[in-house]
Length: 212
Picture (cartoon, rainbow, N blue to C red):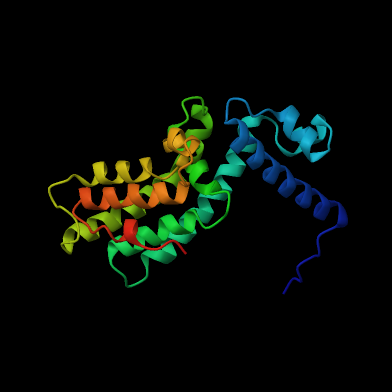
């Protein structure tokens, strides 16, 4: 049986640098959006030459694809774990939203919004990352179908409409004007999800729940 070879120092440094590049890409993307995210700025913030950045990612689209695929895999893993629990469908969907917003910056909600709604997000990246996102959509759709089958949700509302409406709620960027007026993003999300669940025949528990 072959013994796994330890990584060389050079390879370890390369992987650590690549991880840092992805972290910085996230910061710039959340600050500026896809269109205004530049390889020059990412390289400068990482503290490397632009040529070094291109050794890792040949173009901006490759970097964004690697970043979004990593994030989507994390979201999908979370969703699959929640799907397997024995709670009501509404409780599982609420838990999914809470998990997305568990970090202080609510970054995953913002990233989902950018991926779904950004008109300037290149079709190449969107197309290549689509299979993972499609699996996330499929998991949510399956939960909604389960909720319709067990009487939690209105069977007359088409599942694709329920699914699209669910994802449209997932980013505070949707409510930018309210946030600018001082409303708390988590409070906005709680009430928006409460309105959503009432609209599809569920309960209003998410909106009235005390913030942890």
